[in-house]
Image 1 (tube, protein in one colour):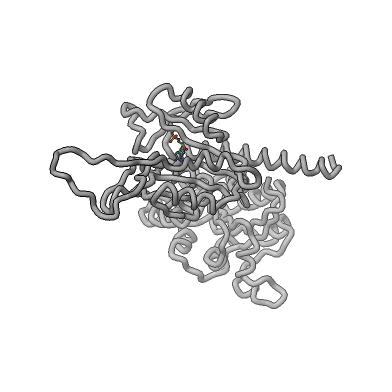
Image 2 (image 1 turned 120 degrees about the horizontal axis):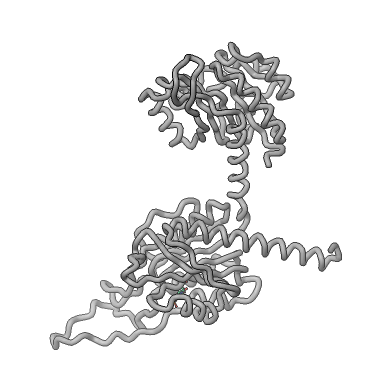
Length: 420
Ligand code: C5P
């Protein structure tokens, strides 16, 4: 769970500061290692003695008591932690954080850290609702600060509304959730995955080309979802208008042959997802000069040849080049599942994500997708989801399959070495 996780707990001022003590106890109970920093205002409400006794280590209060040689410097202290947690975060402390001020130990640590920061605000309801606090909250959220609460309820001052510090159990739950998400998020770390995306473009002559309407949106969504889970994603894309997928290595190509080369160069990889809409044909010999109309009113014959099937080629590779999991897409307009099943067998890939792109569905170029996942064992229809959600679901399924495969491989290796 959070065993051995290091948390730097900053205790701010306010009558709710006593809840920081219970939060500290709950986090230690769950296995976390905690160091405490007490702000000047916080020191008016709780004592360093109680925090020190519960955390099992010295409580830091002053920027200057950290400069002594035997002490950990404030930069090290801010980096020592896996999470900086502020309980309670007063309106004043939030304002300081939003401005990036560093005029005492607590604000200096928050500014100097390179670790995630979580705050549990507590203040009077008017202060919480004040436009200045709303602005600061907005800035902090944009800076990726996680915010727990506050809750609605009666305040120490007798007023009622939002501003009550979250309960210690809620704060502890948010901390555990944060670490769980992070460890889940990195499950594909160390694995390389190749994703093809977008259309390809095949020249007819220097000014004309053959291509299709693929937007590349689904490919971007799959690539980002895999990268969010820690995979090293090589995103091979044809000319599409899209925001580059976050956290991926992008290889831009134009033609199917260039795409094939870029994919082969990226192997070996644990998995490949072929989301590209590769042009089926290219010119046998593209014109060196712009083709002319012949004045007869007819069109010229274009001599086309078939492009290499990237998905089929990769699926047919032998070990160690063939990825353990090869996933293709199938855009169909009729009898979607049957065609997809046949395509899976013909191309030799492991899974096919099949979708109905008949014009009535509005899927082509849109933001939603309704797919059926076809595997060797079964067909699984998914509800209509955004392309982002389809990317997430597919990445999640791939993660389970890849981790399962890695475990099976490790077990087989152990058995081979006589350890089973
Ligand atoms: O045969 P069809 O184009 O319907 O197959 C679609 C699947 O095959 C997609 O995953 C697509 O990326 C992949 N494909 C490919 N190379 C081609 C044609 C399709 O990788 N030349």
